[in-house]
Image (cartoon, rainbow, N blue to C red; front, side, top):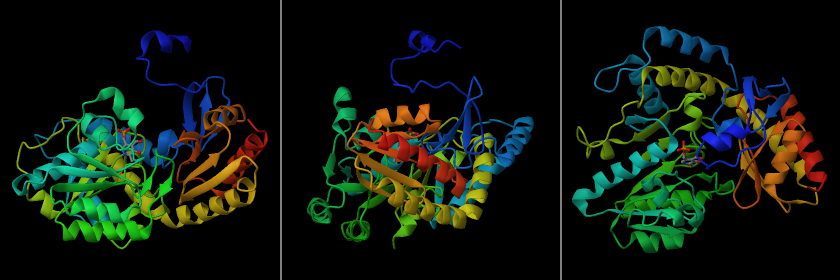
Length: 389
Ligand SMILES: Cc1ncc(COP(=O)(O)O)c(C=O)c1O
C-alpha cells in the first residue's frame, strides 16, 4: 500500500500517524512488515478486549451466518438481550441503540428536548473543555471553540460553565428554562479532567430541585474504562440519561442512549430512529463484551492501581512532566513538550499512545492488559519523555 494515496482519495480531515496497521492480537498490533506495537490507545478507548478476542471472533462468525441486519421494523433477540443487560447494569429503564458516540449524545439531547417540550424547557448546560461529538447537536454542547467556530451557527440555547463549578450551575438552573445538564464524569478529549464528587452530587441535587434532566456522556468512560461498568457509579447518583458507545462494541460501531422511565414516557413512535441502530451483529458482540467486562472488573482495578503506581514512580518525577491524572485504565500525562511528538517518538519505540487536551499524552489501553505489558509501555514512555522530545 502507498500511504500517499490517502491524500489523493480521502477527505483531508485526519492528521494520521505514519503507521499502516494490518492486524492485532491481544494488546499488540502489527504493521505490514510484521513489526509489533504495544497498544496503549485501543483505537481511541474502543478495543477493550484487545484484538482477535476468541469470543468476539466466534460471535461474529456465528451471527454472520444467521443475520447481520434487518432494521428496527422487526424484533431481534440480541438487541433485546443487550437492552436488558444495560438496564440491569445501569439501574435505568429503557435503551435506544444507534451507531456512534455522537449519535448517542444527539439522541440524549433530542430526548431531553422532547421531555422539556411541554414544560417550555429547551436549553442545555454543558461544561468548558467538554467533548460530546461532531454532529450539529453534539457539537453545539461541546465546550471547545476550535471545534465549534468553523460550523457556526450551531444549535441555539447552550450555556457553558466551568467544569466543577457548582455555584454557576445553580445560578443558571434557577432561570428555569433548561431541559438538561450534560456532563462527562471525566473529560476525555478535554485532557482527562476528573469531576469532583461534590460537583457531580450537587449537579444531581440541583437537577432534581430545578426539574432538569442530568445527562452523563459516558462514551469514553463507560463499559469498565474507569474500573466500574459506568463512571457515574463512582458517585452516589444515577443520571436520567446515559450516552454510551466506544468500548461497548469491542471494535464494532455501536452507540446506546439509556434513559429512565421519566424520559421514556415523553417519547412517542417515530420521534427518533436509526436504520442500523442495534443490529443483530453489533448487539450480539456487545453482549459478549459486557459479559467479559463484568468478569474483568477486579482485574481492571488491580492493573489500574498498578498503572497508577508505576506512572507515579517512573513518570511523575521526570522534568518534562507537569501532572498525571486518571483512574482505572484512563490516564493523562501533561508535559512541557509537544504531546504529538511524544506519540510519534513512542511509535518509533513500538508503543501507541495518543493525545488529548492542550498538551496531554493519553493512555487508554485495552482492559485485558496485564502488569507486564503495562511495565513494558511505561518504560518506553519514560525513555521517550526523558529523551526530551
Ligand atoms: C465523551 C465523548 N462523547 C462523544 C464522543 C463522540 O464519539 P464518536 O466519535 O463515536 O462520535 C467522544 C469521542 O471521543 C467522546 O469522548
